[in-house]
Length: 316
Image (tube, rainbow, N blue to C red; front, side):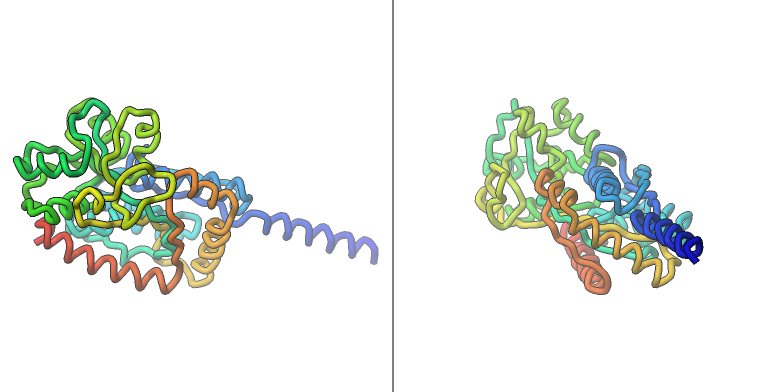
């Protein structure tokens, strides 16, 4: 009897030790290293492992076309595999529309919206442009002479640039927008003086702003953001406010039980001390929204984005 009890105890220990870690995960960042999706995927990776939610998490990069190459690959090759996840976001919603992508977010399993980040407009430290008002002045004088470095075509960065133009009475279709597949490439072009201004999530420019290599002239929030020393677009005379968000999705073809297990791991992640500390460090807002509520919001955002892109001439 004692041997049987010991055997049961040992079996229980194995089960409990197995429960300490959920499934190992492979997370796709559908962009080049250095950008917001890559940063998000690697922050999820380290947080899942540090919090012992998962024993092993791998990140892979599949750049191109605002994430549409990655989402197509993910929807096809990861189908039915609950160990594979993909980071995405508002940029992908716009890119799918502008690229007329045959694979959309309807073909993956959205799990949760995780973070939100405001757009920052920056210039090199040596730039004569010191304020949003001065940028607007140049834009009105000759829209094509102001080149904007940002993320993929149709994403939050280009939408924001178009909305800025529209708000100040400049034809949004005249914006000289230069799309880069990764934040690192856009940053290099900006620091190299190849473009006039940079536009992206604040986190992608933060270290260069703090080092003095870049000067921030506006942030896309409704009000001042704690920890960010910059005027809002509205304070600079441009009536625009917008927030980029990022999400995590599972592949199509998983079971409801598998979706529930992934959702449970993601909920543990967003409530963890490690994740919350990372949000503060990176200036990301906690916009966690999961399940049916997130799926409904995603549908609303997709419809609203289609309207915006048509309005600024990016989608017919």
